[in-house]
Length: 233
Image (cartoon, rainbow, N blue to C red; front, side, top):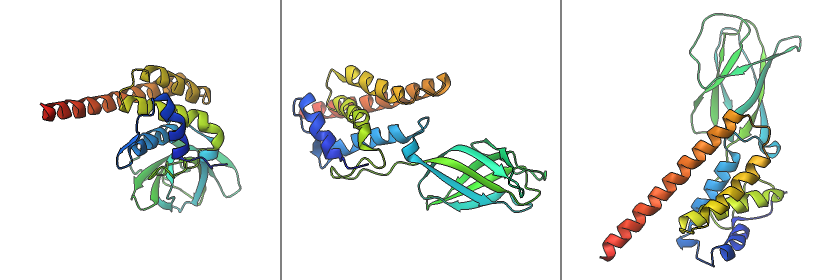
């Protein structure tokens, strides 16, 4: 069940931050922080049952590219192919594929194009030699938080301990609270503990991307403060 809003999280966060305002310039930086948290939770490498959807499409003999309407497509999680007898075969995933005229049962699939209008064009390799059914599971892309009244997209209420700590971590960074490293560790420990099936490579990539993102935010904040101080003098 999803009933909690960003404002519920703001009510949780503010006492930790000594009631500093989190909606300063319009609704920022609160809305910005909420979107960062949501996008972190629903982005690779994390895979959640509540965010999982499925797709399928039939192939045509000699055709490699297949446009499929999937407005909320994020990334493919698993994929397979079935022949006319109903026998299933594993498909390997790829980021992109070149065209190959070799005709046989496809063994690779890539989300080759995204028109930003809700259509994903999948490309298979090899070129199908018969009619098959391609199917798979994917993780949704996160929705956009636009106001304090926005809910946390599809993230259920029992995940409040995750996104509340993420919200606290990002806002403590944005308001220059010295306890950011403490809040950051709380958030990272919670989210990684719920994804203990991640291999070491996926875990390390997530932590590396997290560090790059937080450093970017810190640099942006420092530049803003320096500019403000310069105008004051």
